[in-house]
Length: 323
Image (cartoon, rainbow, N blue to C red; front, side, top):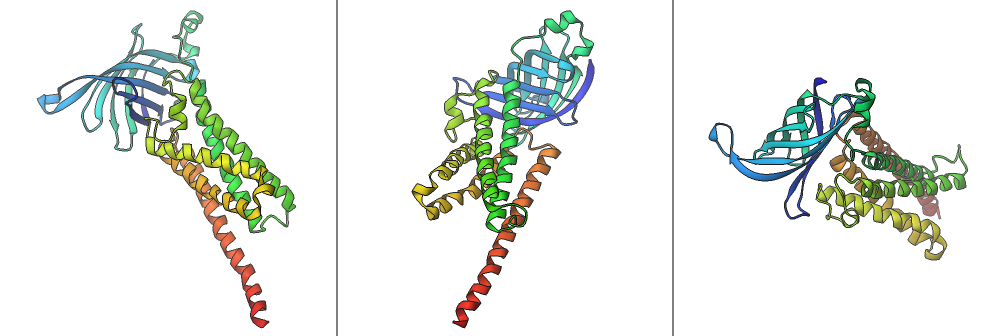
């Protein structure tokens, strides 16, 4: 199936093995449904076009999946200069898939890739025999599960923060009993923590990139955008402490519990930065709308809380002055 696709994603260098590897993940930017994962190893240097400069020679493997169950695995070869600009060729063993493309990798690891050529055929275009003989080992269920869980965790964290702000500013008192709002606030925190855990540990099931448990739980241990992924790990640990504080509130006292609870703002900011700068979907319009909408809601409710508390304190100060 001939065609072309504009893809965007992330690329990072994995230095955990004996030899550094370029790890790539990308999705079609136009909604065609193509998803690419590749591991490329520099195997040498050669002169660039026109004999100017040196470029890396890359070799590795790729998996390309798409609409209708289309999937292909094979060899990836290419060239890349020191600025992150290069060309790549993807070809399966049977010769039915052959794609050529140009790519560029930004300083932050953002990848832009244009592919053109013979794409793998979807299930509707395959014979039953071809569908049954599709390459094995291309199941990305855990990768997609992790991405979905991460976005769900962020949405639930947004709800949790907004509920907390509305409870403290008494914005919900006319619509909902305070104890019910508090229960919703506590439950949303527990649910957000559960999805956050799923976001992390689901990656252990993805055997394409083979993330190790230590890489997922130790800040800065993951080779992919270590600083931004470390923020997500720290947010996970802080969220555990916040959720635990709900259940030991009577033991630690209200004042201590309240101080711990303020960490929720820190968790939210860490999660927002983590999603924006290391999320696979952060470059998509709907994801940008999620992050912008969430930040706007939290900022608006925070401002409202500050103003409402100031308004309540003014009459109290006036009465104290009259005395």
